[in-house]
Image (cartoon, rainbow, N blue to C red; front, top):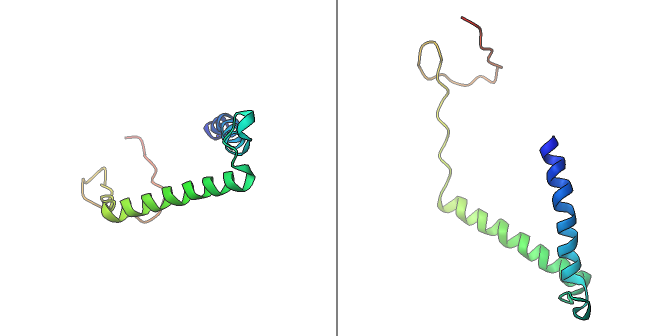
Length: 89
């Protein structure tokens, strides 16, 4: 939870500043895209990143994880969703 708040606090001002740079007029040091242009550019970037990840996962699908191994017998076991307690010997 702490990492979430650290990331949230650190990245929020950066996102606001990028939005300001995109939408601010060029005579004030920005790119002059306006609010609609900045929003369209950010949405287009998001759509491109999602499309790229979709293509990559279809080209190189993830390998399934192996079955868990029983610590006592060393044999593979099917996961049953139960919480496994480690008992002291």
